[in-house]
Image (cartoon, rainbow, N blue to C red):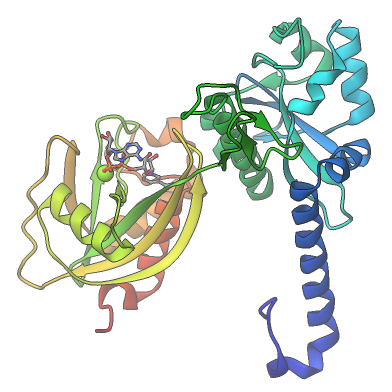
Length: 352
Ligand SMILES: NC(=O)c1ccc[n+]([C@@H]2O[C@H](COP(=O)([O-])OP(=O)(O)OC[C@H]3O[C@@H](n4cnc5c(N)ncnc54)[C@H](O)[C@@H]3O)[C@@H](O)[C@H]2O)c1
Ligand SMILES: [Mg+2]
């Protein structure tokens, strides 16, 4: 049932109304916090903070997964006090979401140089001891987080990264100032507003009707193959970017394509991954790998891909590297695209 259903499901309309109402209320609350600095500051009083150090999130290990602990404002003030730090630096935090009960969630990087603190460089290990956790690079921990924490920490890391890289106005060279929520920065000298950015990237699973095309870059972990990906050029539509990337990377011409899903991807900078299925003309399937972009590319049969998907479920990345061929982890949109191809035969023969 869709959150946005209308007359089609009258019998369940009360439930629909409640779902819609919670979602809208939450969305409007977040909008208010982004627009109103005082409301945002007030929300910090009852909010919760996810902590980072030099863009690595604070995590706690629990059996085979990581948990992302939250801290209240009081706990954070106590920690900073204990470490002899200025609590003013809490104003460097950025808003990353809220619960259905309107507990606002913020992210704060304790390792970056703070504009509002004299003694900015906190000792990482001292903090880890106090916080009973470790600051772990997000790339290493992402696949051992639950979906909700992975998405929240990806947003947080991307936003903190963007603020770190946009401290100065590119026109005046003057320091820019963030609003309380961190949804924008402004140059006080000319009032230019800067908003956080994502680069659009197309990711395409090409099929010839029975097989799908997977490729690897030399930077990928050993044995991992994925769908073709590439940044959109300025002025391009998604369709044009897919056709260009497939031609550029493997020398094939796309016949049909269909959008299927999207995902925010924080590495190395924020990208909006736009996932598509595509087909090539039958008989025009000879791959010509562009070695400037890829290390290898090949057609894989349905059975090979289905077997690799099953294997992915059982093994960790380190264990998978022992195999000649394995696929990206579940959380990556590349995995979802490949899984969809295996589960839905229509992905191999897109309608005109
Ligand atoms: N989430 C997933 O499942 C998934 C899967 C595959 C790739 N990705 C991501 O997609 C991104 C793009 O894939 P790719 O590396 O094959 O891209 P690509 O094929 O466009 O090649 C990368 C090159 O493009 C150039 N480039 C053009 N615009 C750029 C921009 N805005 N930022 C950085 N470089 C730019 C650079 O020269 C760079 O070396 C990667 O950053 C990767 O992390 C995500
Ligand atoms: Mg590429």
